Length: 224
Image (cartoon, rainbow, N blue to C red):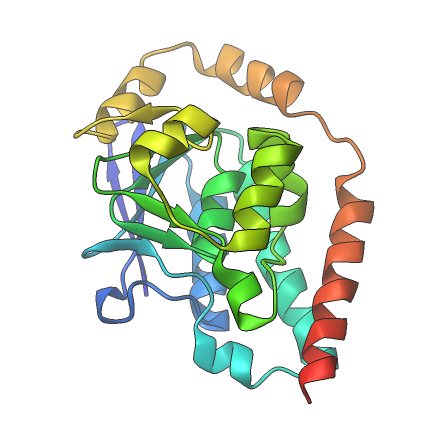
């Protein structure tokens, strides 16, 4: 479900389940965590195979959750997102096609989000009576601001690459997202790591993620 290739200073991690729009099971999340954690290249590119970046959590997994397993599933997704966010190198989300729900959350955990003109984004959880619980409630308002975050999360609407750029959800729109990875690979790697640590900061992420897990589990419990 996850494929890794290395070309010089760039490691490409591909979500490889195109027939399911790269929807994520527990196994795929675990594989993704391992792939990013094991990457030694200074730049990591996260991409999806086929016509989508990532459809988010596999709904067959979500439908089987209860209050106890919901908190565990949320914790797994949060842990994977933190692994991406805290990687020593720069992590670039190369978004081509649809990013939905958990797919948006994984992209939010990356240092840069680079979209092709075909990219679209939506936090669709609210339409299912849920919300993204992989750190999205922490990262989305930090990246796009509270007003835009509320608009995206409460409506579940889809935005194209142009609007995503205007909102600050992505940093560039280009036909060649990998070119950004090549630029990053050409800078001083020690300076890159230091700047990333300084710019990222910590804040109260752990406390907010704990509240996120609990709220997600309560919504799942209410569906039983």
